Image (cartoon, rainbow, N blue to C red; front, side, top):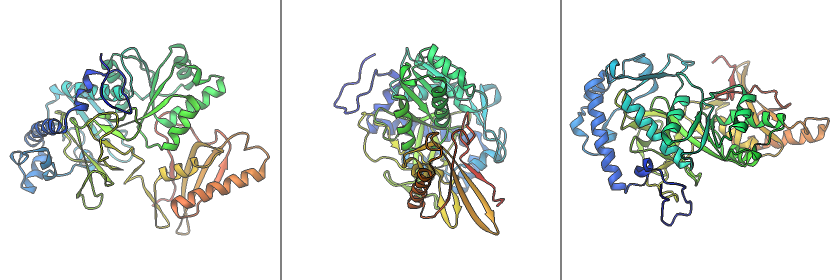
Length: 446
């Protein structure tokens, strides 16, 4: 392998050949995207009744897609479309070509089912290799994969990508934290994949067991499947000495591997020759230019079993207009801090959990474990934020606790513009998650 040359303030590590499309001249990249879009639109139109009907309704045919810019002529796809066509109504290949199926948990309705041909699985693995390369991981690394295996896309997506990279994979899945720490130590693990909230739990348990993660070989964490903040990254890196990287993906598109941070840790590169990104106004659906915030819309350019045309993710972000200093030409999005549909409204104010997390972690003395409880009393919405504090603080120093409580309340009020009831709780009071953390408990029975 050769090292990338060039004047780059953020130097990449060993160059993986699979990463070559990350550095294509923009004109070549757009041509490649156009070719793939035309192919996938024909596949969707010919094989999926929903797409054919909607395109006919808009008066659009596959012949109208002459370049990647014509993507805005196509109709949107939503999660409800997947639910309404449950389980196989959006499949564009016969079952004898479908080698794998994944599905969501279906906790908010019918599960969303997604399908992959062998070619799709290979595309997914290739995208994951490029993500791992962004993190400067390579053959010889030992990757502990603590994402869940099964219908959830996280575990297998990271697994096949790590194998294709040439790394050694430890398919430990989530849970059994003591065993995670033992493996991490005894197997000289160099990178771990899991949710950031679960890694916080690992840090906490390691301290209890007398294991200093700084003494281990671990140098990188690949964290995703839930929004997390820059403050959370700083806490993780300060506590462990590792580099904490974000990874982006969603099962409707392919799973993890849609985008990744590079060494600059300044936005996530979208593997956009496979997953074309747009930003639209969440209310009107009108496209927005790079640099302006809106809802991320993704189109799969290399997925044959189940093409997704202009899928509305509900993730709020923007595309950086300038090229990254790592040298990659594929565009970056701002890391996802909020979604248009995990927002809740309290006393007329739009609130995202990530805003509360940022306000809490701006104050010293708290632990990054919190929960938001919503209730309704006599028609009035109430919000309580429970946050853990260190054992030292949660002693008999009442005055210090009162001072911290007031600082946190003020920090949240400055961020949200409303006063919340804040309650400090002892360490380990809030239930730990082995996967995605449940930050909001809504008991309002709306």
